[in-house]
Image (cartoon, rainbow, N blue to C red; front, side, top):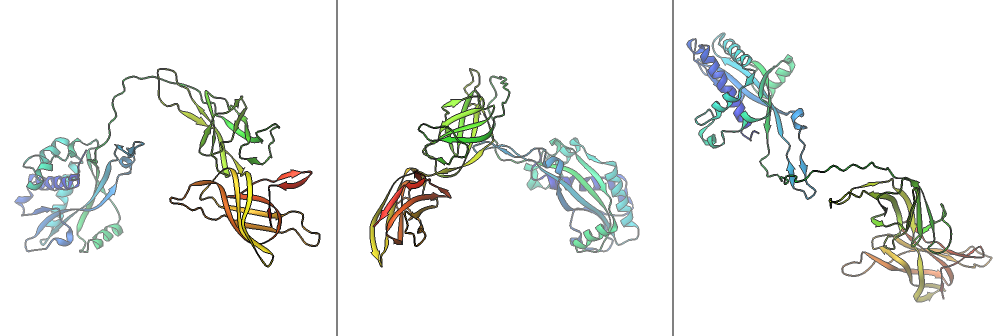
Length: 430
């Protein structure tokens, strides 16, 4: 592939080809001339001035080669492949003279030279860019720009457009419009010189075929860890047993994926999987799916690939183990203090946690009182990422007995029932 000198090399080769072509056509016997590659606004007109100028006015990406080899990196971030810098070069060939018809003669011969040389041959590129070639001496050590060895040959194509676009080009160059022709040169492929990681050769090839089963889930059922039957609409609480129902759920190795945890099922049937929720799971909205790890045949020791089912969301509710009130003081018969709610599991340190109090057995002359308080931020250095109890500072609470619920990221704990009425968990604030 070419290096960063490729653009300058193409311009130098074209300028040299134009000069050689005009000499071969004996234009020098008619009048003296120059072939240059300068911006038109920097060319000063002098007496007996005859010049053919080639100016690179635009560089655009070649979309075909740009998308042919996308950059790629390994899982560790090492570069294993590089994308080509593929460029199309746009030139304006113009002629200038202080003598009538000399500009037309120069442009005509210049266009004929490029017409007769639509492709820059590899041998001509090597000759032009070799030692003692047309590039300046300071660039001779970089002269073999590998331009001759790139996949795509350099092609020269005339580019025809309307007067409006040509006028815009000359206006942008801030110089009066001259007799000119446009050309497009394709394609220069510049390769990255950054190191790339090369994998070791394959010592043994093996073919492993296994049809995918395509597991899918349809619904979630749950029950407590004690006796009872599975129910589809029952609130899901920490420590519950879940049953997933669906299609093609049995695989070589079947795993239940809950949140960020993987759980080995207690029971796997064709359309059902049963497992216990991990206690390390935090309350809130969670997702559950099924993963099939595909067991490869020996002697392969590679990590087994896997296929996954769809994911079903569910709301995991917290479970309260104990509630205590401490540091209770009264002002105008209203209490203030600290409510400590202990859980059978942990909650995340950044999860929004609230406690909900509902008065038990209110008098008949008023409605039951209800309060909501937000948890006190966790303390420590560093701050704990999770905890199995939270403190709530409360105030202006009327003394009495209250049912207690805790809400974690919108998931509320459930209440116990006795004889058709809510009975606990409860706390007495006296």
